[in-house]
Image 1 (cartoon, rainbow, N blue to C red):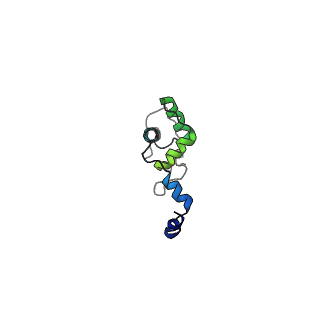
Image 2 (image 1 turned 30 degrees about the vertical axis):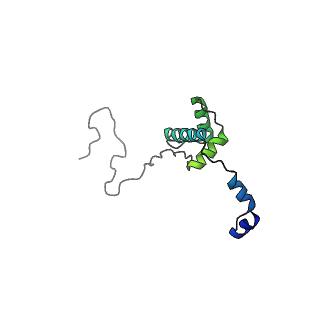
Image 3 (image 1 turned 90 degrees about the vertical axis):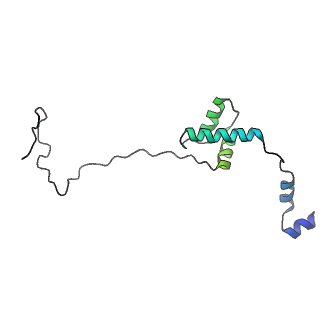
Length: 116
């Protein structure tokens, strides 16, 4: 085995790791992966590992934040928080239309500020 690893340029520890890997996929892990994917979708991509672990535990699946983070990494999911909408600040006068009133009108009558 040492000679074969040397010929193919593979470390012996890597070969042993590959040789001892599990043969069949883990059914429980597949269920947890689907739960992580579903919960991430429900939160519109804003839930991180801690939130997903909490939501999965409430649903009855035993999951810690480290496992949730690992499953998110396997699925390529990243938590992102949407920024708040910022409104434009007013105050700039229109270039083509001058402001004759300068808000000097009373709103107690209809059309009290109409300029002709």
